Image (tube, rainbow, N blue to C red):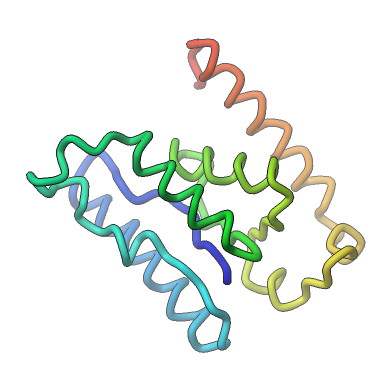
Length: 147
């Protein structure tokens, strides 16, 4: 099963709807290809606005995500994931736990366990991106400005 990771919450409801539509679009594409998946965009939509759930913290939600991710065979990062605190945390969790991370559906289709790195010319670019991300995470942990 592939976990779809990307921004959900946003500064405006219009931006949130755009995020949810993007997550739904990816879920539909994976369905068409017969790829089992989990999309928090579909299962958790609107929870952040539910009065009965106000006491559930961001950390509670991310811990639930980690539990689901640990049961998945891979993670697909949506465009713009780097700007989402949750998606960054999910990405880090997957990398630390050796869960394959994909940046395009084609990579999922081409994936062969043990031979992922050798199949893509842009693997160095992906590695640089991961290192940049880890730097952002360290700055965030230290309370420094991420921008």
